[in-house]
Length: 239
Image 1: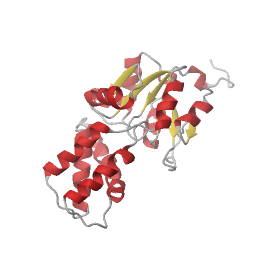
Image 2: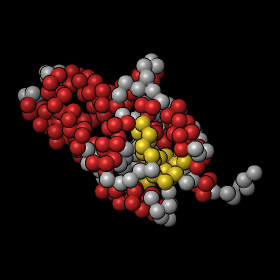
Image 3: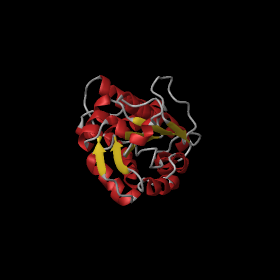
Image 4: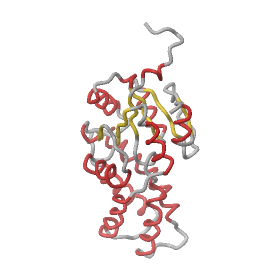
């Protein structure tokens, strides 16, 4: 039995990473092409890509939760983003064609990472196994890892394999089983509180990289670390 002085973080051998918004800069990558899309479809010039992004990002989460709640399975990360964008444009009374939306969606192939994430991953891999655990499709995650991030991950695990979106507990349990580890040996690293909450609920440790300066959910499942960047997390882990 562990003594009260044991640090649970000392058991962690593996870090699982959210990718979208944590490692990859979604806003920085997608707002410029969003502005181009708005110009092409002759939207009201007072409506900016930044404003559309704010509404669109919130809608994306709702689409994923709906799929989980209605037991529709994993309908596809990119498909969900497309549906959420269509809903957002319609909510703003912006006319568009599906071809215009599909052309814009190609921007997801060229997402760029945060520099602190790249530097932090390089430091963290000196002590920990690095695993991508994401809602993205398997082929898409492999593309991003190889062509956009350029950091080697020991495993790339897609929620698509489970047929659910995070934060469904089945995703974290599947990752633990696939890695052959106890949940307590894994720490989830994410910039979204829902991901940390889901991981902690499933027995993982959690590091909340709060790069967006947002409050954590009112919950008993708290992160072990809260930082503003990957580099700060490295410092806290003494890596």
